[in-house]
Image (tube, one colour):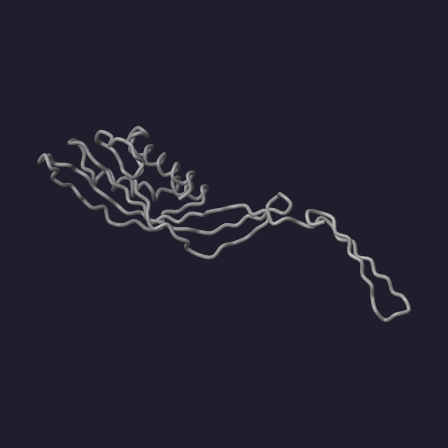
Length: 179
């Protein structure tokens, strides 16, 4: 995903759970593990979902190239002793279907199009402490857009001279980037 997509997901989850932003982390950030409760986000399987579309922009000679991509986002909730991680993730999943949230995703060129089961993956740690956690996979589709400066021809003058020969002589004057 692009940085703006990651930021939106992070901020939406923080908004729903009430957790401070520093307690919602992306895998492989190289940070110290936060204290529980916290949420770990992991993106994988980023791939192109369909063909690209090319459209004009308001800048001469610049085209917008857009392609839909999809990925899987694993959301893991590491809970403290007071709440059930499955309940917290189930609430997030249900909230993602609310029209206001769907609209916010749509405005960013994103959609959560499939949600896996919320699974309890609690475990016993090496110190025999019990770690409560749950996980869910979200299938997300989003647009990647780049601008391509292909150049342009501002104007073309064509002059034709017909003389006694049956051949035509055409002179073309081009103005623009490709002079």
